[in-house]
Length: 178
Image 1 (spheres, rainbow, N blue to C red):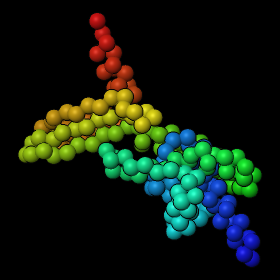
Image 2: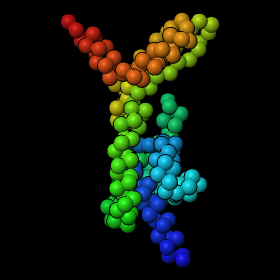
Image 3: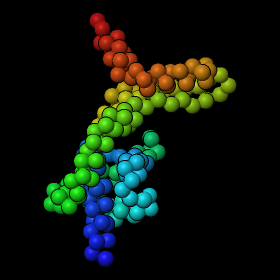
Image 4: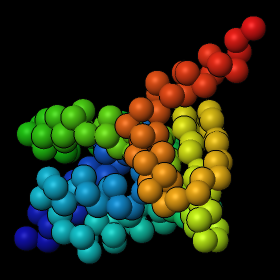
């Protein structure tokens, strides 16, 4: 009984490493939790404990992004080595399930992480809209606009989230036009 339970714990930790490795980008706790819970592999409390244990064993790293007010987790070299040695302990059906899930959700997770749009009310009829595109933790574009209504601010944010790649290209073309 203890051996099976111990093996399950190891597989669950390897699965977290597997997800972080497959995604190839740092993930927030919320994103990791969503991936795990949507696939019904372990419960929330076990997941949080495993993340702490992986951090303590120095198989993953965390860093604070003060700008986004979030903590991100990523696999490190020790975690990659452990995964290379023991990835076969993750049953094939579980790996296949996660490969499929990660492939279908990776684009949405990337988009969520790379495209930022929010607004802040400064005073009556004055809002600051902040628009960003981030790639590999490096800002490609960062625009702050002052607008006169909440409706305008919300529309600009929604439009940026939907069309940022086109808008970014248009802005770049305008700026480099001779």
